Each structure stands twice: as C-alpha cells, then as structure tokens.
Length: 70
Image (cartoon, rainbow, N blue to C red):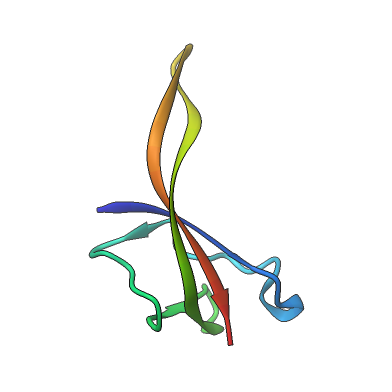
C-alpha cells in the first residue's frame, strides 16, 4: 500500500475525510472519493519526504502528495 496525502483548494472539499492509503499508484485523472461519497479528480502528484515519529525516533518517510480538483 502507498501512503498518500490528499488536499484540495475547493471549499466544498475541505474538511472531508480523504483516503490516506492507496492500493496502487495514483495517476493524474483518477477520481478519489471522500468518506460520504464526495469525489474529485487528481490534478497533480508530488513525491515527498515527510517527518514522522516512530516511537521517540524522528524519521523521514516517503509519501505521495495528491492534489484534487474538479
């Protein structure tokens, strides 16, 4: 599974619970559905490294930043 971070600048999409994991690589043009059924399309993908904590140890973890829009 792939760790993803979904975000959007659409007002109606903010505050929704978006998926945090993907079963397969996400591609531009794919649809992503929030909890409750609201759907947006992937308009860009950025591979990032984010700090996270595993216990008391700080680690950099690869993730995919997914931007959503209509």
